Image 1 (cartoon, rainbow, N blue to C red):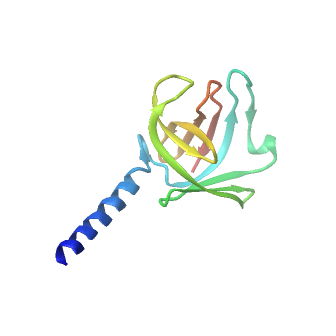
Image 2: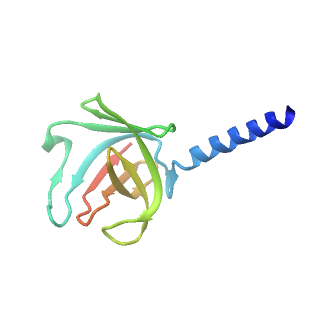
Length: 132
């Protein structure tokens, strides 16, 4: 009986530590609240949009439970799961941390204590910049 209890505790500890580590990428942890600053279109469709030009604010919250909560003008509009894994980005053919949520995959270009920049994982590569 003690062997089973020890085994169960070991599995729980391993699972918990794995799930927390999987949310960390080069530069830091994505778990936080991020406010949309601007989006910059790629080569096929160059544009710049900001909260002022588009007429609303946007905020995303990545949780340690693997959820992303999206807010528009401080009203929750979506609550989905996200997944982070290593992969090759289409726009520059190099390895990045890729994050998938809301049916789309993005390459994480920059992540530090104050900045998060993600790029759509396609040939055009639209950049979206968030700040804490």
